[in-house]
Length: 78
Image (tube, rainbow, N blue to C red; front, top):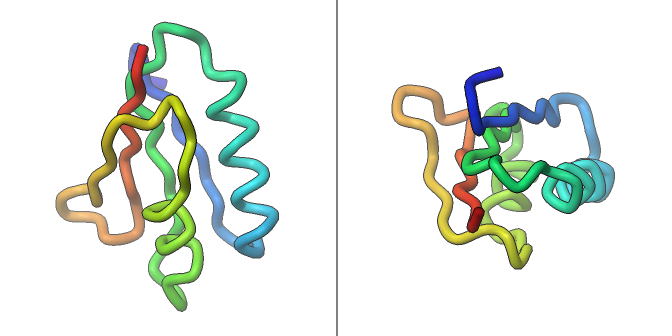
């Protein structure tokens, strides 16, 4: 784990289960966490769309990872 960064792997999960897991991570992430790297894979795009459209009060911005279309980085309000 990089300092201030958490990685969450959602491979193999249904969108609803992945959303629950991601919300849980966001709710419990320590205050020094500034980035959540969400590995959703490419597949059908269902997980990517869920991550891109997820509302959570800690998320201030999001971006697809450069060079990896299967990962979205969420940037948090610390």
